[in-house]
Amino acid sequence: MSNLHSKIIGCGSYLPEKILTNYDIEKIVDTSHDWIFERTGIVQRHIASENESSVDMALHASLKALSMAELSANEIDMIIVATATPERKFPSTAVLLQNRLKIQQGFAFDINAACTGFVYALDVAHKYIQNKAAKNILVVGTEKMSSLLDCTDRNTCVLFGDGAGAIILSESNNPGILSTTIGSDGSYKDLLTVDIDSEFIKMKGNDVFKIAVKTMGKLAVSTLQKNNITINEIDWLIPHQANSRIINAIAKKISLSNEKVILTVDKHGNTSAASIPLALDDAYHNGSLQEGDLIMFEAFGAGFTWGSALLKF
Image (cartoon, rainbow, N blue to C red; front, side, top):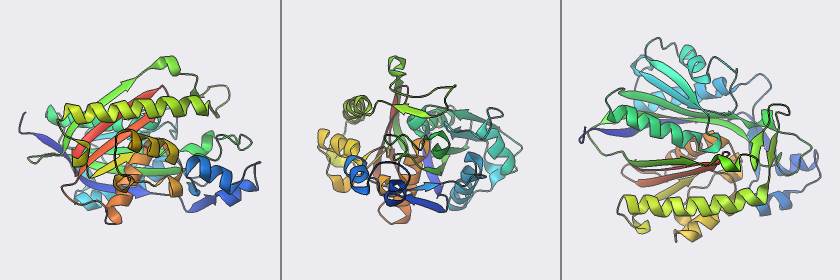
C-alpha cells in the first residue's frame, strides 16, 4: 500500500451560458456593482437555465475530464458527486450521472458538505484507491446555487453562481495526493443554512467571514506541518472561491504571495462544491498549472465544514 498513490489524471468543467453581471443585479435589488465588488471581488456569475440541472452540468464537466484522462466511461468504477443542490431528493445525483454516462458497473453516491463537499469527496476517493477498492474514480462538484437564492435578499443573492467541475482520480505509481484533512463543527449550524421550510439561503455574513479566515488559516499551517514543508514550496493555493476578501486574508495570514493564489471568484461567484474543481480546470487550461506543481486545496462551508488537500499535479 505504501507504493500506491492516487493522482488526478484529468479535469473538466462546465459553466452555464447565461452570465449575470453586477450591473444586471443592480436592476433587481438595491445594490451596486461597486458595493458588490468591494466586499466580494465578484464581477459576474453564471446562471443555469430553468431546465438545466446539477446532473446536466455534471455530465458536461465529466465528459471533458474523461477526455483529458483518455479513459472511457466504462473504465470508471466509482462516482462521488459533491452537491447541496441535487436534481432530485433521491436517487442521488451521482446515480443519475452514472446513468447519463451509461456506466453500469461500480457504484455512485453523493456527499453534502456544502462548500467543502469537493474536498470531502476527494478525501473519500483517495482512501478508496489507497485501500485498493477502486482504480479510477470520477469526483464531481456540481451546484445550481441560483435555485436557493431569494432575489430580494441583497446580502446573499449577489454571492452565488452555478457550474460544475470534475476530476478523474486514478491509481498511480507516482505521487499525487500527499495528504487530506477534513473536519466539521455543527454548533455553527445556524450561521449559514437553508431551512426545509424556506428553501432559501440564510447567512450571517460577518460571523462566517471571521470564522472562515481563522479556520482556513490554521488549516493551511497544519497541512504544511503535517507534510513537513514550508509555504515557499507551494506552487499554488486553490481555495474555495467564496469571497476575495476571505481568500486574500488567508494568503496574508500564511505569508503566501497573492501571485500563487488561483482566483476565479470574480467571474464565477461562489459555486459552492463546484468552485475548487472549476478553479483547477481554469488554471490548467489557461496555462498557469503545470505538471508536477505542488497544490493546496482549501475549503470552508456551512456546517461548519472544512477541509484541505495537498497534492502533486
